[in-house]
Picture (tube, rainbow, N blue to C red):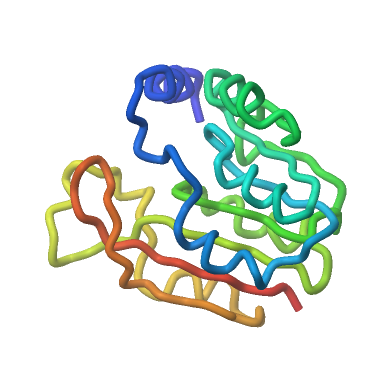
Length: 187
């Protein structure tokens, strides 16, 4: 992402009423299935609500984002969550060092091949983001940030899919939007 886009997100995080102001419902639902120790990575962490929920569950958590404003807010609210300013997908981590990766409302397909590298065998990927819906007006969204139907299943074929639903109704920018939810375990 360019610095311009980071500045745009910095501005969003500075304003009140950001739409991702609490842990995602899907994470709350699958949390009992996730490990209570080890390390978690929250990709595009934002203000850290999901990272903190995972940390309260047990693992140490590293949250990465390219918005300095979001990271500062996260650090002030959740001092137990480690954070790093990262321009995704340009992230370099030790292979096999995470037990859980969280990816909420962020889509960069270049991250997909990195997830199996960074997860330990048997590690979990929790992913939720928007998907393309040919039956609705999505002109307010950028198409490159929308998954296609079945795309996650194809991208993570060979993984154990524990939860999958690509017809989730969600709110995006004040409009109803289809989303995909997936909990998968690396072989």
